[in-house]
Length: 583
Ligand SMILES: Nc1ncnc2c1ncn2[C@@H]1O[C@H](COP(=O)(O)OP(=O)(O)OP(=O)(O)O)[C@@H](O)[C@H]1O
Ligand SMILES: [Mg+2]
Image (cartoon, rainbow, N blue to C red; front, side):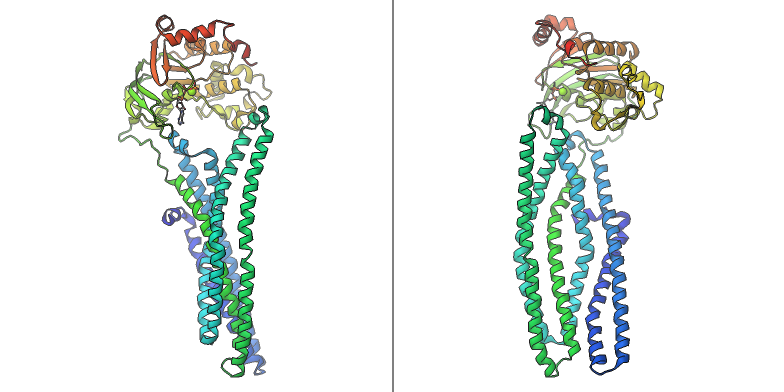
């Protein structure tokens, strides 16, 4: 795990090595100070030698100044290394996530990924900063201070050892259970973040279902849990200081008692006793620091693990051995395809699907909710891989294509589509970054988006909010279609992409496609028969199997499901969408 994490240090490796070195030197300087003080007392004050006082005084000042400079530089390098490291980690995670397949994305929740990239990375950043400074500084302090005090007087050092043992036991008793609480705290953080993300993203739904109170209570409960656990953990930690003080004052008392006797007996000098007082502080403070490092590290282990999970996630779409760089034509062939979601129920969503679409043909796909229409078309641009059988585009298995080339030629308007913050033009140019304004307008005319864009005061420069919240559902769908059209793909897939568009506009879009995109293979998933009835052929899906394939007339004559849907949509007031259209 450490090796894996360390590999992301990159250009901050130097700073990460310099920091502990500087910290170690700083600790050595710190340890020298009590010794110099003892010289001032013994050689200067006791003997009344002013020169010695000045000489050692200046030396003390110099050592303290060096310690200060070392400390400051260590702090600077530590900040640089840890902040840079966190940046690298975030970059690496972001880059990794960009390469995730849909299956990988199914595995992590969005809220989980966000927490991993923010809170977890910050935890690791803090722990790393602490590690670089304290993990070296504290042991160096401890060891050198112990050596110094043994050199002064091994007997009196026994007092330190007793105090250290006491502190170790007490800190151990406090810290070990506390780390367990912190572990739980961070898991709760995840839930809290998930709840915030879900709620805020779906705030409109929350409001329309008048669930504010319920959501508010839920959030308060999550906060209260977190509060309780934090208070519990922190109140345990608050015993640290008193026990530290007990150890320090205990040591001081014992040192004063035994030390005074030793001084009177001439075993040690007053200056040396003074130095021992300084070392007590050094040693016990180092122990305290180490215990804090321990808590911090154990807190960050969970975060490290969660970060590595993201970094280690392998995309499950293996690249082709000899990638094909050109899609010959817009033909699509499903050959005995079976497919199931890896993170789904485990049973196949599509079973033994076989059919063929000619280049330039229009295929309508119809079927009940959950009949796997979306799952079927997602296999064409290889958003998922089949479990058995093969999907071929232009006569070549999709697994043999260079993925970028395939997706360039298979343009898909997803059922749950989003726009990004930026102008309309920016959004359209996701389809083709080099598209001219005229080309963008042409695509919008085909998708019947031009008419409403022209009514916006800023026209094509209208700002779209994150997620496209400031355009209506139907407008968003039409922009998404225009964006897909700009790709000038060989195959265009519309997954329920005109569901929020009124029937008349829907018909206009289809007509524009027929006239302006005659060579493009079109696959149109729809709930309304009217959206697919003029397609060359229609595929009826039922529960992941093909129930019928033929023209509108053929299916109307032979297919039971198609007849039922047709009857339900034409009888009893007809197409509801006619009243439901926007603008
Ligand atoms: N990402 C996923 N992970 C696991 N299971 C999924 C996933 N997406 C869909 N499913 C399951 O696969 C089945 C088919 O879903 P699919 O989205 O293909 O249906 P659909 O025909 O497009 O439905 P709709 O008309 O509502 O869009 C459903 O049972 C669904 O629960
Ligand atoms: Mg669907």
